[in-house]
Image (tube, rainbow, N blue to C red):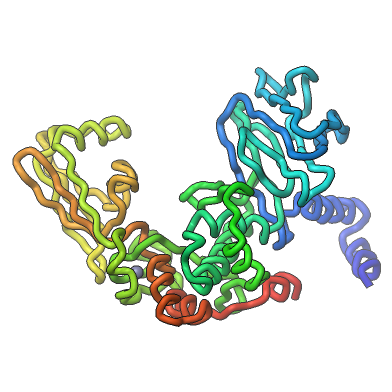
Length: 394
Ligand SMILES: [Zn+2]
């Protein structure tokens, strides 16, 4: 059947066109780019040197020249260095610009990068500035073992862990199919936190296994399953945070997270400190006199700020201000500002962007007896749970 389709394509586009088509198909299969069961996670960016080893025998391949460079014994450490114009392995010499490190007994012998252990394979390549990028390419389910255990505590109820597993699986694949060049996502809060093998926990692994292959679907497509630590009392319409509207990312009242210690925060800055922070972020501004929120979302999150300073007045999107000041300092956009003679005191609600699932709310819902389907249904309006294989292999 497949050969019949190939022959038809060859007939339609001619021999050269067919070769191009074949090359694209093989490249896509080779990189796993269209495969919903694998994911590529950047675990190190911008380094000059990385140390690689494994708990069992492993190999290092030069992918560019298709040759095996090293057959290594367990525990032997190899230093991979970004030299002027190429990647080098100390004691071996120059290599191609893409190395692949494989365990000879996957699942038993675990690879180790700079002291952190990872399932799957490791890819070492370089960015445009010649610095190393290390990518962990692995099965999506095994990837989730290292994500859900970092995103929530293993002590949380199993149904909350299952809701997190489905949301994290969906979010990862949603990112993957944005077709980034070198990797699908990184291991930070910019996407979702991934700690690799060291952080795995049997209860979390159970939640992932019991929801294996399940993803959130809206109109037959993967949902953008964003989540955050604590919404502070109500989640937010997506367009109020990122200017993109998703029909299932609607603001919902959430009384479930209000008793958590993360539902309120206070951050005090001296006027000089805040001015210095903005200056260090490349945003020079005169002596700050006052800060005033002027525009709000219906739930009360700040959309725009007015900053009066010695050289005039600046209107700034609150999201930009949070970006400059840092999201660890200003945990959410739901805040009031108190201006004193010497300080600005920010008093806020929640932790994170407030869009999609509230993790601490989902914990409480699970404690109250809601199952993971009900939790997901509450925070992702109108979505359903689908099977990964059925969505991608139609
Ligand atoms: Zn909440």
